Amino acid sequence: MSGQQEHRARRMWRALEPVHAVSYFAPESRAACDELGTKGYWMSYFALRGAPLGEAPPELVAALFYNFHPGLVARALPAAWKVAAPERFLATRLEAVDAALHRLLGADILASAEVAEAAALAREAALAAPTAGRALAAANAALDWPDAPHLVLWHAQTILREQRGDGHVAALLTAGLDPAETLVAFAAGTGLDATWLRERRGWSEQEWEAAAGRLADRGLLDAGGGLTPAGEELRRDVEARTDALADVPWAMLGDERAEQLTALVAPLVSAILAGDGLLLNNPMGLRPLVDRPSA
Image (cartoon, rainbow, N blue to C red; front, side, top):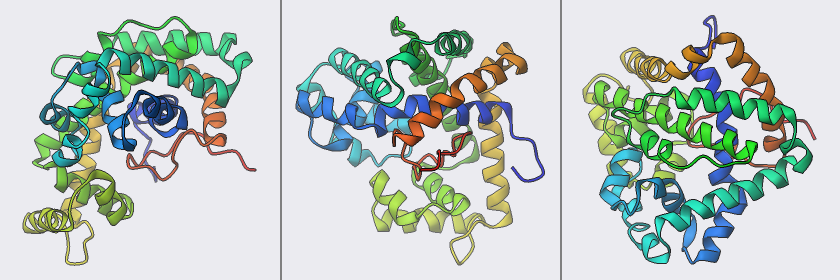
């Protein structure tokens, strides 16, 4: 961040999120869901991420995930629950993540003292994460903890990132940004390809243009589709609120132990990036804290 120190909560998200992201970007999850009988990437995605909620209807999942078109969700749910129960998807999710991390990191690293220490620190942070008003975080926090340290680390980050995401939705609601407007503003502010992001989230061209028009009417988007100064200020405010709402676990852990956790996971994240366990141009706009190793 130019001329400004990065917020602790954002830094920790960037440091840890790749450990969770293998859930959706590594091929093991899709392959495991295909074996169960799901059809296409999105059915597996919504089933795996939504399974902690039980047999949630598409309306609930679309509401909580926020920026996906409800029609995209409805094409996956409740059909996925007819393929397998949420409990089976939860088991499949954990098995697939275990397989992906073994492939990306190797058994020796996963059994190391460093991974065990990272898992203990991340678990402590996750247990301190407030879940009141945060449905996705609460649903994941209610699940049993796995035994293996690398899966404890993964589960802890799952809780922490959903807790952050729930807070982000609250910040977007406070800013008066609906799901489509959120994406339009996000694309304009980050430089992500708008067409790719629109298609990735299931919105039509007409819906996207209508959302852009609403933002322009509020003085947030200029004639060229870029953010106005007011739009940039609103985006900064949303991100600042998101960081503030996500900081409780890290305030509890303290800067020294948070930085220790960052150092412990850095080699793991480097290996995940080297093994293509994360889509580098991702819809989250996530820039991992460590760089992808050179070939």
